[in-house]
Image 1 (tube, rainbow over the protein chains, first blue to last red):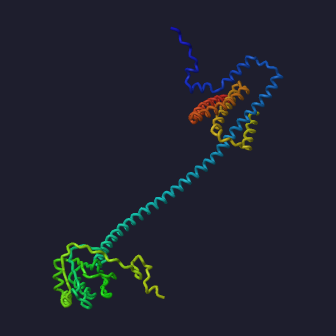
Image 2 (cartoon, rainbow over the protein chains, first blue to last red; image 1 turned 90 degrees about the vertical axis):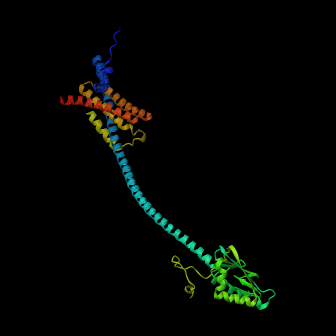
Image 3 (spheres, each protein chain N blue to C red; image 1 turned 120 degrees about the horizontal axis):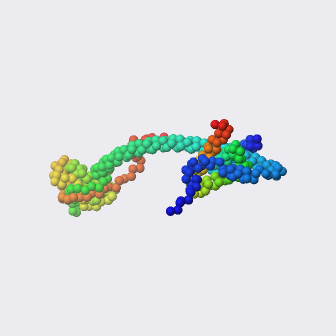
Length: 294
Length: 110
């Protein structure tokens, strides 16, 4: 077996120890060894010129070294002020933004609280609106401005055959019958398709009769929503009903009461309010006619 | 004598002109300074040992500076600039320390 070749020192030495050992540039030793070998026999003239040149080079290198160190130091201190400034401005920005963030969060909280209270208001208003709509429907049904349906009777009235002049059915006769029907428990009445409201009236124009300003022709058919079992009997027994029967009998009107089954009554067309304004708590600026008078 | 004069002149020049280092060279300046320091301390030690050679000093000075900067530049290009400059500074620092220790031994005979 062949002997292993000798391993050089710099291979086996640990790296850090090697660095420490060779901290001096080996070139200095090489140069010194070369000089020793040359025997220091350089000529004095050449040596003098070379020494001057070398001294100049040395001085230049030292100047370059000092320049390098100074420039690095100056640059570092300059950069330090700049980076400090930028850091401080960053910190300022962070503080500022944090402040803005907290302000925004406060705004968010207050806005959320506002949203909650508005939501509550909305809920309350929705409830109030439902109640108001229910009330409106009830009032509409009651006053004649809302369509209704329900059981009732159909009452037909006509003049006596062959009658003329004052024997015909007139507005006052129909008014009397209507009052009698209301008194007997009628809840909604329409005459020939015209719904009777709290403002309705029968009026004579010539030989015709107007209701809600619309002409109606005989026979006059009253659709009456109410209890069909008691309506006819109550009509007979009430005082105003008795008056109607007396009138009918004296003038010979044809009068007929039938069970109408389930009837649908139309709504009367609401009239526009021209002078009236709604006075409510939220309309404080509403002016009445008296206010606008000079 | 010459060395002290040169140092003084260099510092004064640097303070007077405060040349602006281009932004691209900024990261290499500290490494170059450390490499130059290593060369200077090596030269001082060689001088005290009596084997100083100005030609060797000039060459080692410039080659140290250029090689150190080149290594860091290469590291920057490879994405390991920080690690490589750390390695360069460790090696140069160890050399500086051991050179200074040797110088101390010569100056104080301790």
